[in-house]
Amino acid sequence: MSESSIIAGIDIGTTRVTEVIARLNREGQIDVLGVGEEPCQGLRRGLIIDIDSVAAAIAAANKRATRMAGVNIRKAFVGVPVIRVSCATSRGMTATSGDDWRVTATDVRHALNSAKVLAIPPDREIISVLPQEYIVDGLGGIRSPEGMTGIRLEVITKVITGQVAILENITESIERAGLIVEGRVLEPIAAAQALLTEEQTHRGVMLIDIGGQVTQVVTFYEGTPIQLLCVPIGGMHITNDISIGMKVSFDEAEKIKEKSALDGQNDTEENEFIRNIIDARLRELIELIESETREIRGRGLVPCGVVFAGAGAFTPNTTELACEILDLPAEIGKPRPIRAPRGIEPHNISQVALGIVRYVSDNSGFLIMRESQASTFEKVISGIRGWFDEFVKDFF
Image 1 (spheres, rainbow, N blue to C red):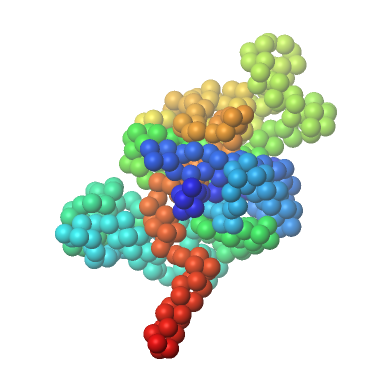
Image 2: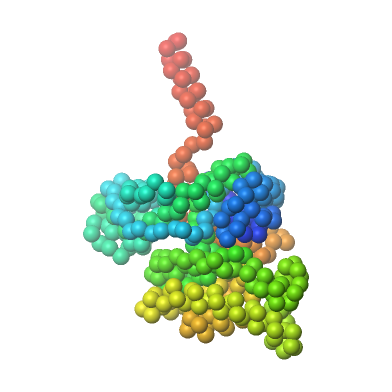
């Protein structure tokens, strides 16, 4: 099994940490090798507030995932929430280096790296560089330039930056768990990779990922994210409302919420009361999203409607309220096909962790960078071999 083909994705969620270890097979499909989950109480409103608690959960999830996969993982890609992120447009350029002036994956990576050269405040750091359009010798509108012929490759990108403090807390948590951050992927974009089709992202679609304490939204058009949004309301707020309204514990309220999803339209007085509590909070959430996305929807950029993700997506009446308030078709996302070990159901795996793996496997820049960077051990061995060769030449 080639080590360069194995990818680990970590989702640091509000209530649990999930690690997925997978590889890209010869058919270009995702084979899940191992999954590890561990409850986590070290976050509040999507942000880490207890690094030790999060690190312990990451270490436990990694131990379970590596044991199932039968491999030892020391590096991982991690999800980053779209909290306090900002976006800037940047342009990068490079000369092509392939045979017959053909654009290579390395050229694409160089162009994207050159787009990172822009003024950034000291309290911010680049999370992602998202290509919007490639231009080869002045010909624009290109989505995938590899293999095309040209002398100059340009790229127009969206550079996403986040607060250094938030990113450092994520990195510190990963490192205290004994791992290395190999790269970062925005959480709603990762979820989109796991749930949305290429046709949806090209024609225009909105993904709403309802987490425990925050809801993250990404809107795609022509295959590119055009808006990122975070709303400080999640599934735990609904549970808390039920707890207060029904005068029960939080755990009991969670069971009531789950039962109400199964009961469907069973019209009893108690169920009606519970649905009213749920609908009030859901309406608040979706109305906030409606306000923030009004311009994009008004321009007709979301013809494929709304797709819901996250555990909160299964809250009763979610899609119905979305249709009413957003005036768009709405559905709960269905995971894209993967191959997983026996006993692992794809719909029960964190779609963010799965999406991280798929995003990285589809991004040749990540894989080229990985293959081009020899491990420390390999560099040491290479250096010893070089010294020994020179020694032999001098001695004899």
